Structure formats: C-alpha cells, structure tokens
Length: 149
Image 1 (cartoon, helix red, strand yellow):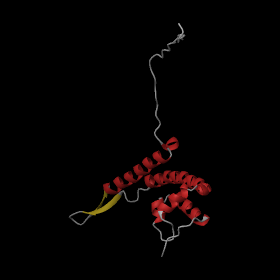
Image 2 (cartoon, one colour; image 1 turned 180 degrees about the horizontal axis):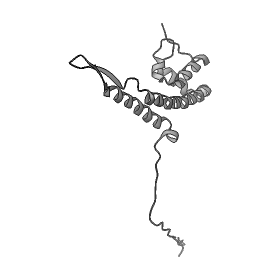
Image 3 (spheres, one colour; image 1 turned 120 degrees about the vertical axis):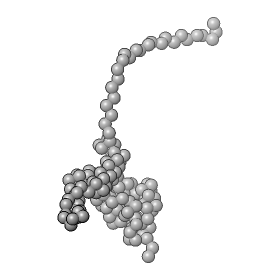
Image 4 (cartoon, helix red, strand yellow; image 1 turned 180 degrees about the vertical axis):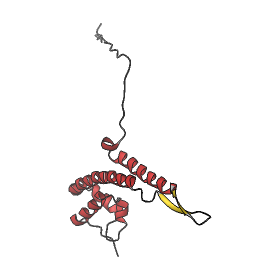
C-alpha cells in the first residue's frame, strides 16, 4: 500500500491533532495511512502551505503544554513505586522499586529538557544576570584634517 503524498487539509488536521496530543512526527508518520516525514517537512517548506505551517506551529505549542501535564501525571503516579518480594521463609514484604522510580525520573527529565528547547521563553531556565562595577563612558573627539593643508 503506497503512502499518500499529496497535501490534504484532513491529513494536516490529523497530524496536528496528534502532535497536540503529545505524539512525535516520527511516530505519526510510521502509520501506513500517513505521509512519510520527508513529505510533511516538504509541506512545511512550501509557500502555498502557510496555513499548515501556522497550524503546525500551534500544534507544537500545544504539545509542549501536553508534556507539562504528562510530567504531573508521571510524578503523581506512585502505583509501581513498591513491589512485593518473597522472603526465604515464604513471607511476603514490600520493597521500594528503584528501577521504576528511576525510569519515572528519566521520563520527567526528558520531557523537561525537551520543553526547555521547544519553548525556552516559557519553560527554559531563567538566567539572573547581575552586573557589578562602574560603567565608564569616554568621549572621543574626531579631528578632520583638510588634505589641502
């Protein structure tokens, strides 16, 4: 089955909706009913598709906000932070699942990093610059020499 290669508003709407829902363009373009990534990138570079470019930019902004919501969900979900272990005597006990906690931290950190790159003004690190010392302004006078002299 060949992938569609011509632009349609319906396909553009689906792509942008899925991006808004947090999916990557690579993931979307893996589907057989979607164009490949190179085609979508070509659409974005086409002057005739300025409406799609604007829609795509808005979808990317919404995607960043979706990542923020996912961070809250991942952080608040403690369902697998503990696991049951059987002791040698057959008794069961609960122990911390360090692997799951580390994976959750990695998922949060990856989203935070991506958000800071995709929307640095909103989610990037704030730099607090402080200047100390004096500012000295020197006035330089120009002397114009007449070549006839």
